[in-house]
Image (cartoon, rainbow, N blue to C red; front, side):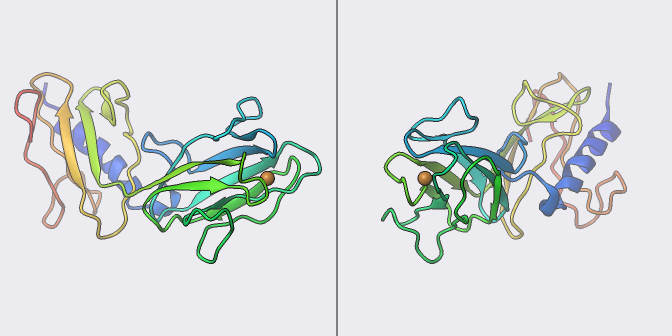
Length: 217
Ligand SMILES: [Cu+2]
């Protein structure tokens, strides 16, 4: 069976989300929400929940240029912490380094920031930087592999194909390279950005050639 309309509709949903970067997930390529909860303990480090606190803490992956919200929870009732990205590695907060307000106790204290420096850096608490640190990866999303299945939708892996497909966010002006892989056999797909939401590729809308399992684009 040939399902161009279904594939187009899936692409439309996917790309509507692309056009609304302010509401799209920005923290992980698999569509996780743009938010982390971090539990901090001056003697043990950071954790994504209160039972997994360790040093170094969890590696966080965020998108360059897109807001991230971290809910900060202090484990000890009366110990002050903060959270910042120590871009220059001097264990101190400097101008231009994303830094939360001080916090303590269960809160949580919400800190929203926009990562503006690509690459790996270390996040810390300025007061307990020897224990409370971890890696933050700030990535520009530019290479995307998408798996297509007319019956299931799109996925970032062949095991997570779904409809609507995963949200994708890109900085305006970013060159994006898609690798498109058909999961189903002998069904033609394409990929286009349906800016005007009319379900068909129009002039000015980026569009691939048709592809299928044996003839990749
Ligand atoms: Cu601390």
